[in-house]
Image (cartoon, rainbow, N blue to C red):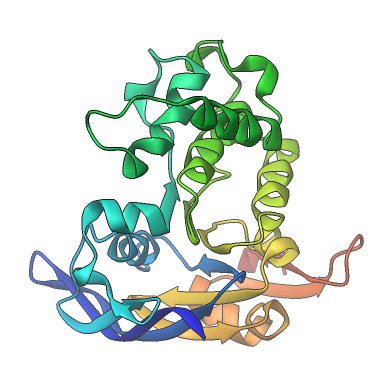
Length: 258
């Protein structure tokens, strides 16, 4: 049974078409990479899943129910987001940032319980930050901050995790660490990723967007080919095999190099 369904979804913003008749399904526990050039519509698609945008036409379903039928708290209990680092968190401790993941599960008058703190400890331990829970969020490294935001998302206990460029501004070690953590969660993940080789290593499936259209959808071996990528990214493209994994490795080059 599909967890998410996009049915001929079209999105217009300021009278400009951003997505054109996009259709796909996402199964439970799938790790899907959302790839494409800048302006292809990746972030807009993620915002549709967060109900920040409403489709101009078509329908989005979550667990066989139209997305617009979910209240904000209901949706937050199903879908969690890790995006670019938000500035308003820098005055908080790591513990305070992660505890924000409980908001969808709490009434205004409810305080944080002992069971909540136990869940907090579990998620901090899961991302390797248990020893830093009392530190200011601002003092963490970039990789640690992303892991703290991941712990906050996991405290929401979602069925679907959305990642908007989760490895931006991270060095290679933290890029792989972040992707390994997300891969091991055992829940459905949609991640917008610029680095095609990182996507190749960790994703079960790729959705390639180009000018708002879904131009390829399939396993990494089917999507990461010269024939598919070269016209979309407008660069010479050579695909060979990653020397560490039996996965495609993408190399782009300038025409003058040939």
